Image 1 (cartoon, rainbow, N blue to C red):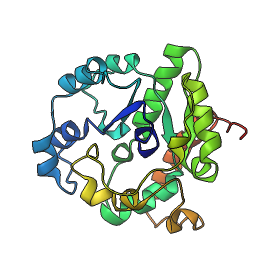
Image 2 (cartoon, rainbow, N blue to C red; image 1 turned 180 degrees about the vertical axis):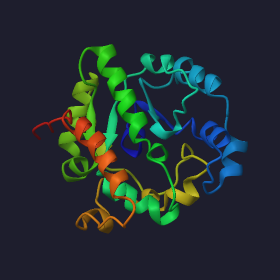
Image 3 (cartoon, rainbow, N blue to C red; image 1 turned 60 degrees about the vertical axis):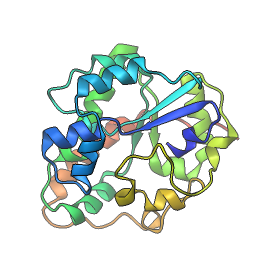
Length: 230
């Protein structure tokens, strides 16, 4: 999101379905009441806005979504109006990190099944795989991956995507104080200490969940973009 927002030709929106997700799912996230109060919690209204209220001052409109926000009662027809790209990350790192905050959870709370379902929907609609980026590969070669992504989307690459000034943004969601401390300090793509560490050991009781997530991750990994030469 920071990379695209730093382009002079792009406007971004941060997790526009988060309020709907919290209100409908009952999930207890930090700042839940403030998020619900600040956002449109009608998914139909949000989806319509995302597809019709495109900013006129910029050529590109970047929407950051979390697939766990796509609850079962939602129709996904509106998604067909977007150019959908997928970001994947090593499942065991996600599971171990999430388990520290919420020890009991289903895989759906991490968005893995929803991401796979949306990916397969896109493959069927397009007749080919949509762009997939792997987080580790992106951190290792941000320019090559972002150039490949832009090429896949048919938009020009801009060097402004590689670095940005630190600090808060007006576009950041209400939840930024709880989740964005590292993002606010960032000035570009760099792995955190945790991301540089070897893959963490999975606590007892989570192995089956990790295996299910890993299967989904591997299915999408087969379609990861090849970084462009720089």
